[in-house]
Length: 300
Image 1 (tube, rainbow, N blue to C red):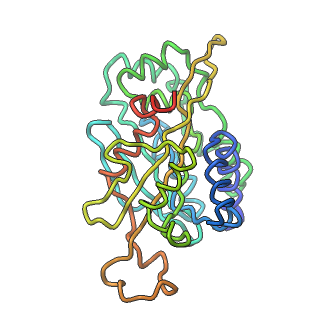
Image 2: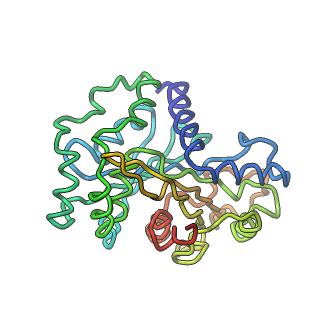
């Protein structure tokens, strides 16, 4: 694994994501002005996330090839029955790099009409597009992650899909765009190193938070706390030149507490390995809704 290749890919993802998600600049500016950080380079990116469609030649089986080739290791699986989603997370080759969370829509579980709409865009993909990539070429990977794999959807198809699966509608238009990146709150200076206090800071600067399941989503063991912004609404173009406001990407915030067996360590001794690892399906289920209309209504 070439670390430079991976860092170039991650840099490309973050560059385009930051351009598309104004909340990022707003949050980072507030953090700098209030001296939580002096530079965005000081922030630990807990994880980044992608959404995919479970259809032949695409989905997790295809997407994960990119990051496995770059040194990531597949870890735990998660399942979301009501949303018809499956997911895995991937650990990085270095603790300095973000974890990756990749979800996939179980298209086969959708209605016949929804499957037909999705198929009208993806059936033309007759081989895995990742197999055609040079996975040692970061610029080629970067271009692929920001290129459409199917034609621009019609507004009618987007709206119809959204009635059954807002996740499906998001992916059919946004494709492989980075869904979110995550600020590791526990590594910020006190007193902003707890999610409760950091959320107060965010809201004092006009940041709108996802309230599904509460502003703070807590794992059953109480060691993983997560919050997120509500996705910003963007004016998107559809086939035929139609335009409509849709949800874009968002920002997440995570606090990983120290595991019980390491509570004796001094703060200066605590590393990533001493904190709660992995993810929690119950938390993620609510975080997904950061792009759903019930939440984005707060921003309209």
